[in-house]
Length: 405
Image (cartoon, rainbow, N blue to C red; front, side, top):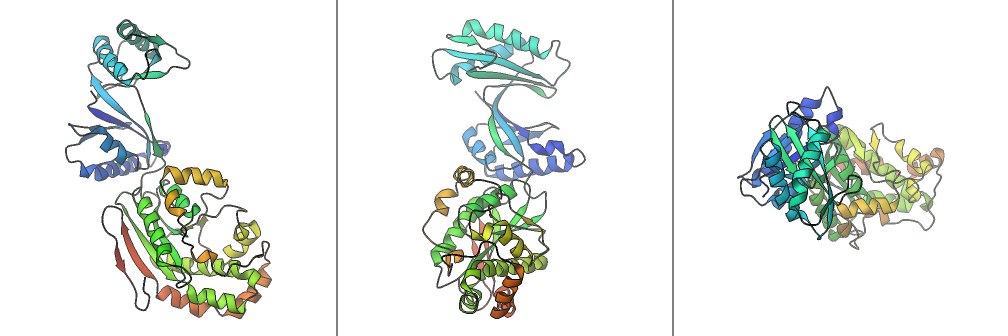
């Protein structure tokens, strides 16, 4: 019955001067991801994108569209002739197939993009409904709270009908907004922060701080698995993961500083490393999964002291979210079950029972100076390994000397 999928664009339609650029990017992303289904053909207009199925199972296409940012919604459609009888005839078949019970309420909504059609949107909806009602058993009109909405989209390129719309991811097309470095812990929050940033058109590189032997190979594998899920929401299915050896830095902090400052000093070291890598790789922002007040290192006082080490913009997409809200997104994007695997990351190493929650910068600097961290930070950067993750193929590892992943 369905011969095409109609795609509507997301919030990029608000960006008037950049509209053409955004439009081209999102349509390129759709075509690139749909290359695995070579029978598909495409047509682009200013306000719609059409995917002609040509015998391809529509669910395969929807599975792909579910991973593409910059889309408002999409619908399984039938193209019909622009007259009442043909619209009603095909609509009857569509409604009969979509009915889930004997008695169903419906209404007709018309979008009259083609102004040459000789009636108003309301008149068209009324005329189509009149022709449908006598031919579908148990069908009644309810214009306020219907079980089903038949949409009639009259456009210059054709007339289309459909009964369902699938909500897209929204946001901006992948790669339109620059580059970000995602601080990836392996917990629930950082993958969600990464997804929300990808959704705003940012290409991400991930950084993970590993502390062998205190953290296991399975902790690193958990991060890899999470990023392969996130890579599925990018255009090319790839994300680079930088793995920083963090053991010597944590040992120095643990043995030389007051234990209540362990978390603060560790976070400052992480940001110093992230700052230098961003500048080396021309990355625009640092991204993390911090949520205000969730743990000791995420109080406003702690965030302020940690931020002092960098002038890079730091984006915290889940800063104001409740944990339940973050978990809900994690479930939707399919990272939650991976995040709760029982393999701890370096953030749990040497954490004191009562870490300081309102650190003062002068006290932090005193403790930091005891540790002489800068040589260790430089060495960690030099020994950072890169893993190229590809959600469609096996990942490859390019490791610097003396660091075994």
